Image 1 (cartoon, helix red, strand yellow):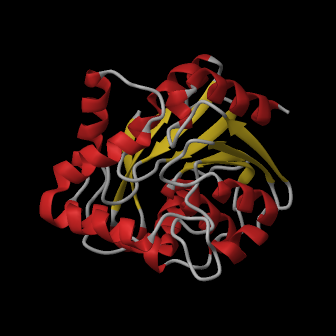
Image 2 (image 1 turned 30 degrees about the horizontal axis):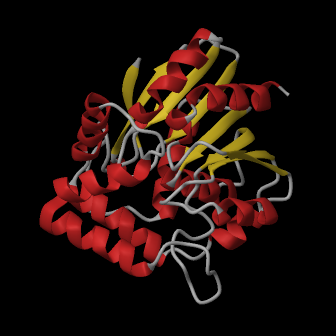
Length: 271
């Protein structure tokens, strides 16, 4: 079932809620520049296993409203809390991929992990997507600046190039076209402003130290977007965490090795 929930500043956030009466709930936060549909192959598996799956389209992406502002991690995590409050969620698993992982981390710190029983981070853009003077492990600032410039000058070309970085294993042309269309669903301004947030945000280092729940970190060793050393830093900063390396994955662990991914998260949830 799909419906809308009002987030920060009355922005309508689209939610896909599958298997509502199930006992165990997983809330999915997608990465840039996609939507909750990126987790299609998790929904197929998990709903059949008896889990409730809630996919949230972040503002500016998928079927959610596309305001011109509110693309910082504070506001995006407030949108997540609006969904949690509206649905009265408790004892759920929060799963975030890429930028969705960064938003999940901010939610855990800013809202004290309200309702979250366990946390899953996959290819998370944390503690910093880019290199900084005190953090040498990310991609270059110039790479992100090129993405922003490409968004404003030729967004379809930028998205094509990003798709080439996203997967480690070769995917079919129809699948790549589907992935491309997910990116085109977003507004140009939201696409660019999320990328700007990667440059501006510096607080995830402290946020991760505040996470108390058991955390599973999944990361592809061939990730060209969120480089693998980011996962090792997450493991250091989140006390009760476990890192599982995916040796045949890039940024899209949930598709490059979807069977392994699905089994790892269900094992972690059921432990």
